Image (cartoon, rainbow, N blue to C red; front, side, top):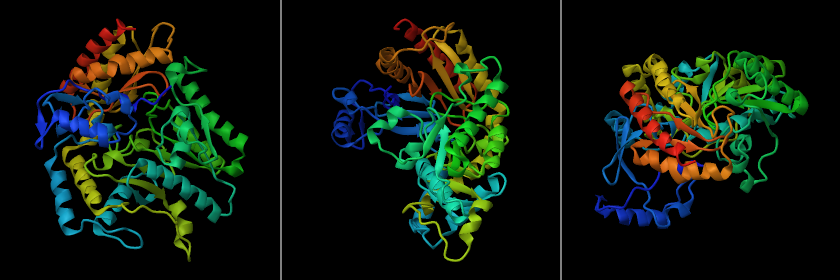
Length: 475
């Protein structure tokens, strides 16, 4: 099934509005002619206007026509503190006027130093070393490369393979894409980096075994990781990459005890556990890091997005002291880096963003309101098209089904008509920006800014109810 990031929004009707002296029609034509939009069917806008967002304020975004939309996806799981935060813009301006750029290749600057210290203070266990990147995919790439070199330095050069889960998304660089478990996102780029193997995810709604026992299913799913390690040979497996709550496929939380079992398995076979928290870190699930929500300590954390609330690009791989130790001796070093890793402006914005977290107690806010968000979305369970509502914190997926009793899903043509032909455009037109996705079974994903409250939850539910009700009549 085709990747569906191209259905994040739909084109509104053309109008006479303008931005910066350019009409909406003129900007749309320029976008069609020059802007290669990511994960987008460019043919979608052959005759339609490209949706153009020009402003954000709190939990809302505004298009070039002046229409307002509730940002139900925090941009792209990113804008934790909401749009239009002047203090973040000011932090960027101050830093740019003082030191706009300098690399951290054998040098340092105060913002990178202080941000690394702050991330280490928030990370669990002995994860005290921070390698900066510019995004989550680069952080995943960094973690795999570091794992390979670590085992070479410690006398286990054959340990290079990685294990991840079916339908999981871990990024677009060649290594990260190999770890990704979405065949349709990879086939056109093969051959990829060898050595990446997949195991079942934790989609309890479609559990192949133990469908009536969540804990037993979690034990089974974790044990599939050990089976894969043994099948490949423990002497060849370097790392396991898992998200605290798997994004792609529609927000799969871990069953009770799942991560504790995975941690035991990794320790038994000397395999590193990487917690990919590109989405789940920085309050998305409540705590600063998602692994804390589920009480496990990984060997590395990869993160990005919410670190700056999207106001400037940055990512990081946070690494345990144990993994860093072989690199502290003699001439050994990690031959890896990025021009803009630890960028001074991005690091300054990240620091200001984390200040907002503390000042406004956003982590506590998510924990205090996650049940209300869940209960509000659960109201949609009375619709025949809604098969499952699942997630954690401010991160939820609503799986859509053809038959609620049998859990029958839509075929490719039906999914195409429902998601791209109707649902995404209808949700956007109704004032809700979110994600209709079919990398797996069809889902609507919601991950609003962490500042959202009950009034925003109610608005989401009401828009979804109206649009999904109409959608049932179009199947």
